[in-house]
Amino acid sequence: MKIAVIGSTMMDLVSYTDKIPAAGETCESEEFHIACGGKGANQAIAAGKLGADVLMLTSVGDDLFGEQARKNFAEHHVDTKYVRTAKDTMNGVATILVDASSQNRILIHKGANDRLTPAMIAAAGNDLKQCGLFVLQLEVPLETVYAAIIFARENHIPVLLNPAPAVKELSIEMVCQCDFFVPNETELAALTRMPTNSLDEIRKAAAQLVSQGMKNVIVTMGDKGVLWLNGNQQELVPAKHVTAVDTTGAGDAFIGCFAACYTSTGDIRQSLQEASLYAALSVTKKGTQDSYASYAEFKSFAAEKI
Ligand code: RIB
Image (cartoon, rainbow, N blue to C red; front, side, top):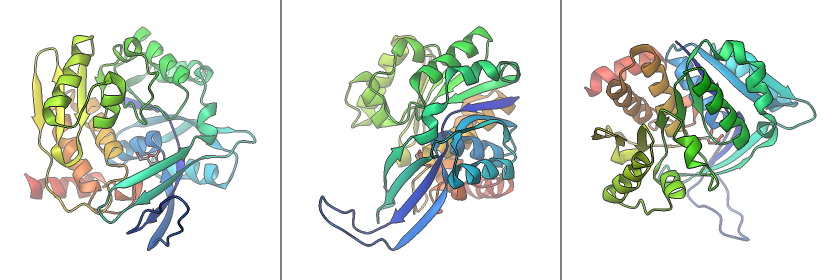
């Protein structure tokens, strides 16, 4: 089944540094890259690299970055029929600092992503109806995310919502219409206003969302694994231990792989296990999309790790 990713496209400006500058300070980075990113685009490319059939709805800039992003989708066999260029608008940009412990700090400027409107969902209606899963994030206007959820409900299409970056005004009623809600600890805390500093606190916050009507809450916790809760069960999928060099985009790798596996197998547990492994492999390499393995690379890594 085809996956529709309705979301953001950015150009990532990534600096690797041992020292994060303090206010008023200038530091020098050891390495710098410009690469295609954006949570939506990353998730689409990850699924595409694994062989899934992906339709991307996004808004790119009327500039060189926008052109490059469009080419990047096409090169990775992502359907670009609804990749729109927003006239006289710059592409979204993410300024990313990766420190010596492989952690990242990200500052985004949405640019053209703010021009992804509910009207674009309506315009793509006939093609969207053919999809077996919608994948959404929060780097585009909330009204567009809500329009996509409503469209999916009306057409009986499952929805995965990754509430990233955290947005305080996200409506729980809308989120409860989704089949899979996939936050990290910080995003879970923002929505529930509960602490998420330990596994126990994360369990309680996720359980509260389930009690409010969410079908499947899947909390990604980095090297602590993934917690899956629904009305019937709680399960911890442990993370594979690897040496991390750059964790940027690992959550997107997880979601892209989950979407690819779930749309081909319909098996949530298997999809979580594969997605955890795929995300673990991604942190062993630098970059976001550049760190995502092809299907063949992933299978050979999985064979070693099982
Ligand atoms: O999740 C990682 C992504 O977040 C980066 O590619 C950057 O573009 C930001 O959107």
